Amino acid sequence: MVLHWFRRDLRVADNTALSEAARRAEVVVPVFILEDALRTGPDVGAARLAFLLRSVRDLRDDLGRRGYPLIIRAGKSELELPKLAAELGAEAVFCNQRYEPYSQARDARVFNALNTAGIGFEVFKDAVVWEEREILTQAGNPYTVFTPYSKAWKARPVPPPYATLPPTTRKYPVVASAPLPLDPAELGHPLTQTVPATGSAGAGKLLDDFLAGPVFAYAEGRDFPAQRGTSRLSPHFRCGTIGIRTVLARLELARKQAGTDPGRRKGCEIFLTELIWREFYQQVLSNFPHVMKGCFRPEYDALGWSENRAHFEAWCAGQTGYPIVDAAMRCLNATGEMHNRLRMITAMFLTKDLLISWQWGERYFMQKLVDGDLGANNGGWQWSAGTGTDAAPYFRIFNPVSQGQKFDPVGDFVRQWVPELAGVDSGVIHEPWTAGIFGGGARYPRPIVDHGEQRLKCLAMFKAVRGVGG
DNA sequence: TGAAATGTTGGGGCG
DNA sequence: ACGCCCCAACATTTC
Image 1 (cartoon, chains in turn red, yellow, purple):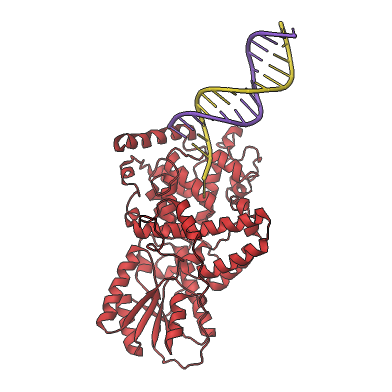
Image 2: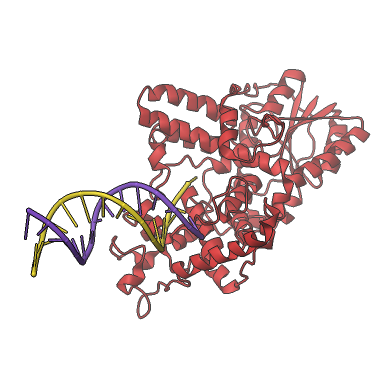
């Protein structure tokens, strides 16, 4: 008998460890552990927690339909797993690898506890196609620039999906199972945001919809937040409610469907590139764990960031006076989702207009994002701030007005999230101050900073550090 | 996966 | 017809 320990792999299809357990053991017993870290960990977000809990419920239903009762336990994994394995007489615990340093520390404790009890522990690669030591430069070092990394990634064969867990009719021993909270408030995190459809069913619907059309227009469509041009799969990748190999296999079918049309092929290609970004930042985190605590380039730890709380709070609340920034932040606060173009714009604004450290923004995003993933979030923030691997050069500073005009040309996205500007003409919606749209009866704030001035201050701030560091 | 400043060119208005 | 200026429209450089 093998226990399959579900963590961020909440699905029965294309699950490496689960399919291996089914292949190698007579009996597979699935278990999920409600750890304290779900409640007390750093930057717990209620929306993300709700998404996870609901996806565990969906998984329990999926498993139940196949004849497997999901056992839920609460407590420390290093205590609960040996205890459950002993109760059931299991020989081993299987699970899929996680890449956050704190998860790996926990897994080391689990290994020791199981080992002491004479129970096996096997960890499988599942969430990524290639792990941190599998794609290296000729010199044997990790890549720190995306383009050559993606080239090396694409040069390799893509593995097919793993078999779905086969149904069973076996009678399982009845053991205690803890109740599954579905409302994160039960864990001390009241939900204030909406939560997208969860579980493998939710993921499958998104994938079907995306591959039926938007993927073919992705080359342009992905940049317009008012359109549904992106896959929205990120929270599912984070919880493992869909498998990467499944997505890649389906994408390959779409590519064939795209035929010879260069635009449609390009869309498929760019979507693949986005999936590779996810693995790129995952391997950066694994190979350079110091990025969790500071800049990838340590010389930038000396940057003299502002600590203006009022500015930070205005940014968080979507009250900066720059419509595209405010719309994006209000969307995040309400839904836990934010389009990637808007993540770049809001991150650039925090770091290069408000001159506030990317680390403040990184933390806030983790509190609010339904898809918040340590590697991808950290990588994205350091890219925007110009402190990371393959980062935007420090002098590449987005203009929040022209970015709005370029990527929300009619202002539909702004109008959706900034009702104060609902009646403003498209021509000035990204710079309403030029039309006197503030003060008096209007509620929309004036810009809290001047972009032109702040841009120069930002350049000076970076220059000061570069001057010293060389 | 920029934007601003600066430089160059060429057409058209005008004296 | 010619030189001069203005200013788009690009192109290049700089941050």
